[in-house]
Length: 308
Image 1: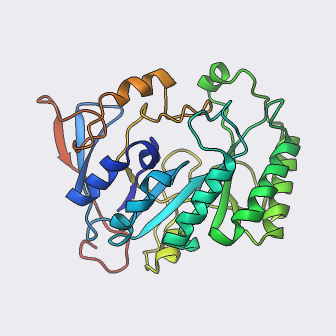
Image 2 (image 1 turned 180 degrees about the horizontal axis):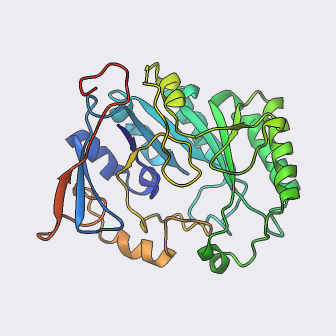
């Protein structure tokens, strides 16, 4: 089983102690976002978890103690660093600080375990196609020796975004093509393997791979693990990743990114943060008497493991 720690919130940045506690105690509880009374228990031990996948915009808080997880588990790290400033990502460190932290992370875990995420790509009057390409090149020049690959995607125009980001400029097919051509050329210049995430069109002519960002091939190669040849069901429509289980919770990330899909609104996340107890097996609150506790299925994807 693949454990995802950062699909619903930035646990690394805001819930560091809780995350380390869960792996130390060997289990976590996850509340079903659609059926809140259903709580699933996942064992967090090396014999039940094939790989722990992280996704964060700031790994600095966990770096001093990250070895507590990496010493015991196969791991892979997605590090999101974009062109945006505090106007769009108010809780995220600046580009220079973020790149410095990524380099430190790479020195700890190895470049083969790190994907730089440059997403979502969106346009405003300030963040133009040219601005993206200039910033991406500046970052690629610095980060290329420290990463396994780069992953990008174009922003998905869901309904909530219309109210959260009225300054957003709709991406035309010409915009997407110009961005893909430029990003592909820059990545090639610096020897970076680049791919899309989800269904963003076919840009293979620009040297851009169309693949899942969390596949058994990627995770296995990074950790020297042989996985089975399995169909990747994805986590949502258009996704080509292997299925995983997320131990986070929606409406809990304090980054306040205006394009965020995981928060209803920033105020809700701040309210929920008050319910957090680092000692609880749940990210928010505790188990209630009316909760239905179930044991999560944890079948291994490895070729040779005890529960094949």
